[in-house]
Image (cartoon, rainbow, N blue to C red; front, side, top):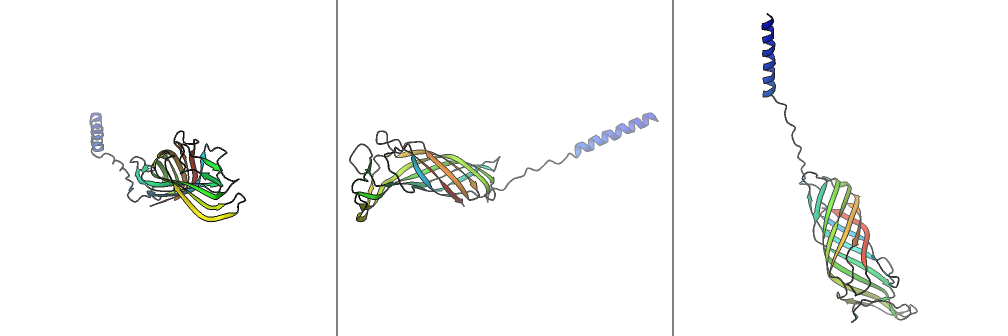
Amino acid sequence: MKKFITLSVCALLAASSLMAQEDPKPKKKKVVVDMSNRANDHLLLQFGYTAWAGKPDTINTGGFSKSINGYFMFDFPFKNNPNLSMAFGPGIASDHILFSETKVGIKDNVSELYFTDQSDTNHFKKTKLATVYLEAPVEFRYSAQPLTGKGLKFAVGVKVGMMLNAHTRNVKFESKADETITDYVMKESNKKFFNKTRLSGMARVGLGHISLFGSYQFTPLLKDGFGPVLRPFSIGITLSGL
């Protein structure tokens, strides 16, 4: 009887083992996130304050100097982490530096760009030096909510630019007593003093479609020996979408 019971128990255990092998636990299905309709932040519009690092005290800047930029970016999310992505694309960037009672000798036939204080003689009341670049930024991005485009966003990267134009705009010619002699605008254009390419670092942080940005130009604004070593930097607001 004992042998019969022992054999029966062994048979039941063997059958149970075979059933367990034939009916394995189902594997967990891999969750696939649909990123086709994610918020890509293709369009970036920037407006901010700009200035020159390394500017000597002899250069009389005045007023609100500004930076105005626009980019169209292509965004590529990481397959293993949709919160991260790389983005790049073309754009136009411009800096507008304002001066008070200063001549910017952009058309002078000299070997160096001079910023001459003319407060003790006849002068233009305001002068603006504008530089315009075709730029190609590359960004490493983080988005806390990549599907909706809301929440915390952060980006860091570099941008390479090629100068398209450099010009001055001079407004209202005055006497040394600041009395108007003639109210007219004089524009002058010349790129010979400037480096034609530039490399800048940039960073952005914000919530949703609004963020703060900062940029710093690593390469000098002017060619070696053509004036002081000036490096533009900007801080401001970015509006993103699409």
